Length: 291
Ligand SMILES: [Ca+2]
Image: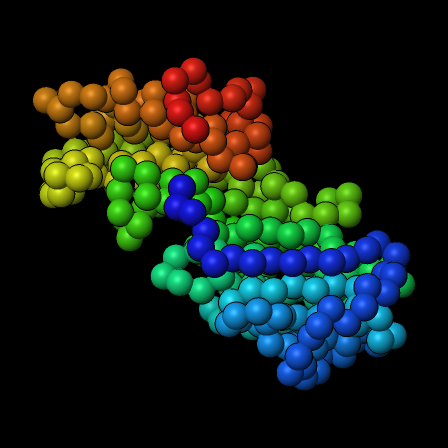
């Protein structure tokens, strides 16, 4: 994993909303008001960047600092567009107003942080989500009123491939018991038909994606398909795809199988949910996987 650079996050929050003082904010301007809650965007305390303050009845209840911050980020899917989620929207479906705060550390890649706040009678930071390199999406994915969140798992970024050819499988979070949690059942998809699996494997095996770059001799199209299968509950089919798509004369398939299934997959934050989705125990990375 790449190191995050320049990410300075300061979160001061209390469940009871006690006053924390103005914390040396300068150049502040109000950006949004929800009943007694007021968001102010300020210059960062030190260096470039921004500081967001949330005040409730003039007492600071939440502060976050990052390179760039938005209170109403364009994250809500409506048709093909991404609409902003205005502060005060009921995102979690419990009748209380929420706000989604977006922080971006800047730079070419990495990292987006999302904070989901509850602005009701009791202030709360419901989630802080690390979205890595990809903008999350809020959409309605099931029958309950809460919006679900679609993220991308970044654990395979730069794994045996440059970033541009690194797959990032989809993860869905559902609001359960007071916070957003991975929702294996919302990620489930039917397995590929046998003939389609075979055709895709054959095209990949005989395609030109292998040995194009001595640093990355493998074709990352291989684990792009495998990850889509694993993250939709079809891990057994992902193993079969590896067997079918790996070029016959090429050594290293067993080593790759181990590095993918027994190591990298299990390093993911979402591995427990992915294991449950595939009916497996969430075993830790195998011995010798490295850190
Ligand atoms: Ca829902």
